[in-house]
Length: 88
Image (cartoon, rainbow, N blue to C red; front, side, top):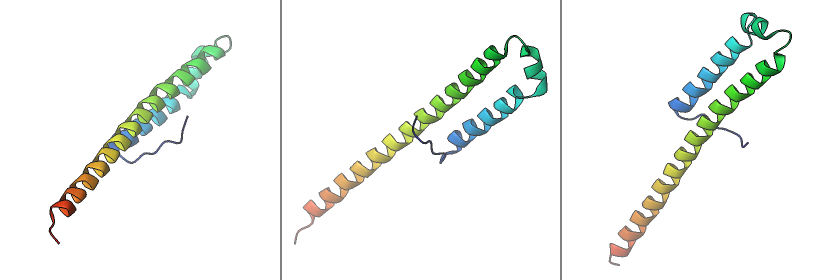
């Protein structure tokens, strides 16, 4: 997985949400429900939780970069069009 960036409020909110859910999942009450025979299930649940949230954040990152690239290409086209229209 590539390095994630948290530039938009939605990305930061998802990250904070993930941290809070992991904090709860790592609490004594939750671990005690799984202990001693189902600790593998606890680890799997933790992994599933992480991957879900990180995939959502990665998707938001992709959307943001695609939008940024589209804006840059449209700006370049606009500038070229203005230069082309300009009479020397």
